[in-house]
Amino acid sequence: MKMKIAFKFFSILIMTPLFIFGPSFYLGETEAAETKSQSSEQSNENIDIKLFTFKPETIEVPVGTTVVWTNSDAIEHSVTNGTPEKPGMSFDSDFFTEGQTFTFTFDKPGTYPYFCKRHNSMRGEIKVVPAAP
Amino acid sequence: MRGKPFLTLFLTLGFALAFSVSSPSFAGGDSMMHSSFTKASDLRLALNSLLREHVFLAATATDAALGGRNTEFQAAAGALDANSVDLSKVIGSVYGPDAEKAFLPLWRKHIGFFVDYTVGTSTKDKAKQEKAVSDLVQYTKDFGAFMHSASPALPANAVADLVKTHVLTLKAVVDAQAAKNWAQADSDIRTAASHMQMIADPLAEAIINQFPNKFAAK
Ligand SMILES: [Cu+2]
Image (cartoon, chains in turn cyan, yellow):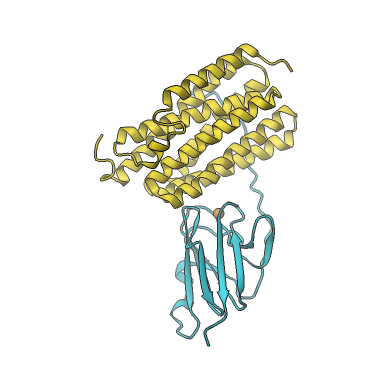
């Protein structure tokens, strides 16, 4: 079946301006994430972004934990604090694509919801609790 | 606006018929959606039927919207959403509940962009139309990426291109409806509907190859 389509795309990709927060922001290739092997009292938690889902969606971690998100989808996602209706100020990875990671260290207890700016239905939550005495 | 009562009646009857025919296995078919497919042919049929139905219901919705018939639009949009839910259940039956949950808002998103395009067309708001088209083109990449994550054998770009053709064929329907070129619109609806096989078949094939044990029976 032949399509008779004479149509031009106005496909200008409009990127949301970059807002980068926090000194503990790190964005890079998976293989470049070298911090993992450093052994200390600080722990790492990994979250996989796969099939437009943060896996696991919710985690509870002690203060000082570094969370590493790895994008396993062939599309850009973001890890943005808050909700689409009310973005937060704590962290925003902006867009990062397949194979890249975003790392953030949680220094303060609290509940940190987050979402993807491109796919607003993608939600996750980090619950940061005081470190065990 | 008085509209075209004959066409409307025809379409309504057509969809009522389509629904009654497919209802035992698809529409509102909780029985089917919650049990997984065991036969490859069932999966292929389900994807083809639901994706074609998507086109017909979308065209009914856009026609009603362009004609300013809100009650009819709401009804069509409701049926279209029920179709989206059924489609997400097929996805869930194959890839699991997380995929189902992620698929539904993603699929609904392109319907929202189409509503935007239709509203832009009916109000002659060129900026709104262009934004909707740009959103739809972006969307095809999202959909391609999603399917590639679900079934790595499906190349993201190839799926995106197939969905782009879906977007363009449905856009042609809306344009013809807006121009009140009914012969063209109906011919475009047939083109858009038959194109869905180009999406459904490769999807079904990839799934069947990915889960050979699940789809032992042909
Ligand atoms: Cu995303």
